Image 1 (cartoon, each protein chain N blue to C red):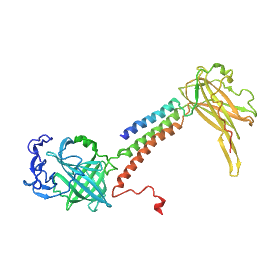
Image 2 (cartoon, chains in turn blue, green):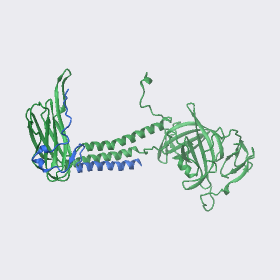
Image 3 (cartoon, each protein chain N blue to C red):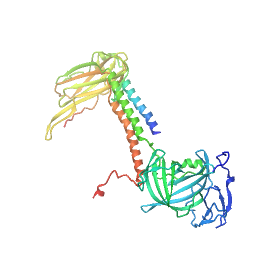
Image 4 (cartoon, each protein chain N blue to C red):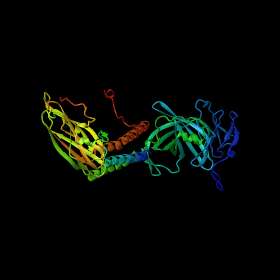
Length: 61
Length: 446
């Protein structure tokens, strides 16, 4: 029984890895934005990145 | 045992013969007439000679079993392996190991055409037992052989002990007495157990198979539920299956498939260099609007990932780059920020460094089309000149998936193996060959 469950589980794992590679999935997180105006190319400052207020590392030892 | 044309294997109660106990006068029903050797009176527990028409008293026994009644009442009927059997006798036996007395019950089952079979019960664990038709092969040079071969199957020695019959009730196909002693040797090959019983010079081999109490309750239509099984019994099948090795073989096959998958995608992925530009931020830059856009570039092929790599020559500073990969035609953007920092120096411990001058990020599932990057660098106000390079690659394998896949395949196996290992340790800890302890505390050593 466990062998059968593991067999199905393993196939699902391999299928998930294959799908992730084939579809180009990623583990990195990012936001998607739709309908970015074409004017951004002429005026890049008109677009505000959601990451622009990101915390910056100011350390060092 | 049988005569003439084979009759139905389901006996009728017409075989039973009513008699009276010569000791107390209680009615006695002989269910296995002609087959039983002794019968025990249910009233006074006297053991009577079932083959004597007058039911000669062989042994009287005064202690009642009221505090320990049989779990399956005498007269219960149920179908086992296609034949209907009737419970005709029960005995309670015990062994003493290291001063502790262990009790179990043995039920005698009878079918006039199939003969006798037995059910044993110990702390909620049941076995369906029959006498061996063939003689098991053992190394006769050893007083207690460590292995027995029965019908080509190897059984491992589990335990040898002297058993005592404490109580008997009903009919038996041998001359049973309270106080009978026998030397029992059990060999196991779960779910089977091979038992050698030596009484005087007589040796009997029997083969048993583990059965679940609930199945017997259903078979004999007994009310309530069977007693809960306690601990791990000698021939109890492992809950993770007998063949952990076979599951490891499957796991190995999956790992090979995973490796093949990785090699396959590695070979077929394009890893196409789409874009690579070097940028310079002079000291104090940027003074105005920091963001800018790249030239439009083409991402071709099927929907796949895009890897963005940022290289820099940072030294004791940081740069934060906000990216947006924007599709010219659809206006869809993937927005992400990356921070790169690198610090190094010397202190009393010697040279040290922190951070990394390179950063990689994978943008998922980007369809083909025309794209550009909006790049917005952020730096600390007083920074040295910074050079950084932005590079885009299309259709790059993500090896982390294989790492996750590897762990996803291995971890359940590790859990199954550990479960099986601890189950087998529990099993053998009750045997004559207990496993050595895994951990020994320092207190024990001192």
